[in-house]
Image (cartoon, rainbow, N blue to C red; front, side, top):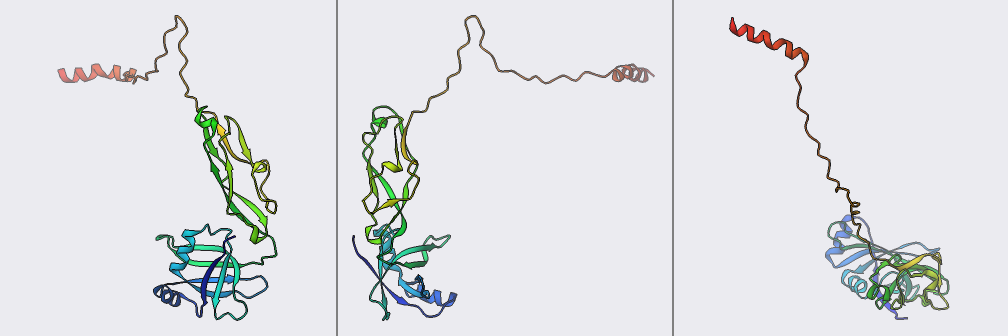
Length: 233
């Protein structure tokens, strides 16, 4: 497994003013959580963190924190617990690290990737439907795979790949339901065609709603002669 190191510094002070000063200096606020220990306020280089996020799939990747001035340990292995983004500009504004033990199993999510084009799509006109894009696994931090890749070239129409079919290293356990469908080749959509009229039967025409004409009431008919009689006078 590739070792990733990130240099950080302990942070003093909190609040908006302090955070603003950090950002102006090219740093971001962060927190390190450790089981059985007090959390530690940190500051991390904005450019270093962005480079780390772009170069690696951050979820499930062990990051060795080198904390400047930390006399307790040279490096602290950890996972990124959460990254907070600005709601408008989408840039990183805060990071939470979670310190881990390399000798205890942990649970993380890893992605599922595919290789090849299914026979059921290429030759039989079906469509590939991806139901599950990642799975939750349990293993030692040093055994976390980057992901699970599956060859789908031989997948035919109406065939599926389930969680139980996924290839995983012997020291890795998948926690998802084994019967869950990861992906399937579905039948092509059929267009509905209107049924042809039977022999001798005229095709149905759409019903036309005609506006009803107003019929004068009996009261109106009785009053009409009186109006004419007034005009003669």
